[in-house]
Length: 461
Image 1 (spheres, one colour):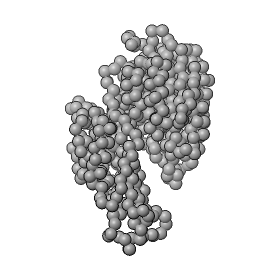
Image 2 (spheres, one colour):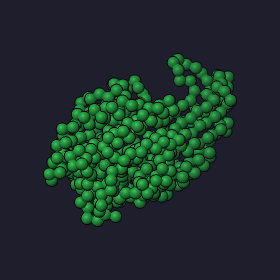
Image 3 (cartoon, helix red, strand yellow):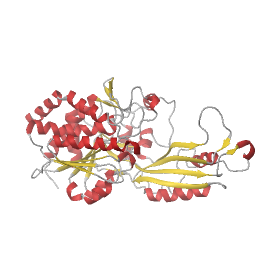
Image 4 (tube, one colour):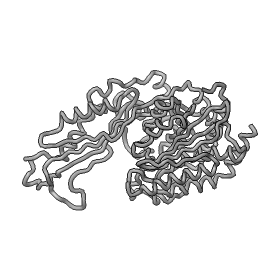
């Protein structure tokens, strides 16, 4: 108990320093999808590596053909488990810039939140674990278990170089449990442990018609308009009941259990409040399922971007030569991304109209995953969160995807704790992304307490 009191006191006394650290890393525009930002992404990786070295951890900055990977570790502790903390220092593009109330890479504190791109996804959440380790090392000069940090700069673009790294370095990365904080709490004041994640299959569909833009008065009605074709093809992917029309799409979907449906229904959730939060006047989705069930445990298909034709000010009457769309399917256990892709390609080819050349690019994919609630690591995390936040967590699923969870299971045979400190209204991937500073500090406390709880497990693999 005295150890935890000293740690709590250290975290309390260093809140402002932790905030300054977060501001420093948030100022780096580490947008991994933009080649022009490669130097900034690398700079963020070096920042993380330097921070871990300052804690006295053995630290490597591993260069790849993309962005660098940071790997750091403390000394092994005899008879105690090893936890691997995963996170990422790259961020999404900040567009649309006009909707930000302040510049996305100039962090500001507003209404108790720090606002900047990367605040909640994932720089702020990741730093809670760095500071949790720091609290132990500064107050006791040791950690109760061995910690390893694996931090990448390509999470937002598919983690191309991470899987080979995990495979090549599996002995160095060996652990008993993985800890990831890249999800959300259930609600304000209600922490959660996420036990399930959706998978993803992401695509770009390109359609090409005439060799160049054509005058719509002269040629309209005589050739297929790629923009019209794209609209029809995308509409054909879902029916009026909200179901995806890709053949065999639902064949492998594991249905929700009665226990899960009862658990979701028992959570303090209101469709009305949810609509107010989002600023919409109605909710849609697959018929026969609640909003939480649709978001967390049913597969979906959504369009993310559309490009075609003239889009400048004023009018220009053309038949565009090309049209394209980016879209994805969020998958659930046991859907196979490859099988979905094969069926999708065949379906689109069957409805592609005459006069249109079609190309479907499979950009990246990952299967869904469910973490067993019976794990002793889940129980340890529950105890740590209750101590850190002052309230026991609930167990939820998440509609987002973290493909590396599957990689850890396949390569390291390790359970994963998904401990999110963010909120659903943190505007992840959107304008005015934020993270509550109070949750930032409580997450740091919970992280520090987690290492103590894990050290108390009776059986270590």
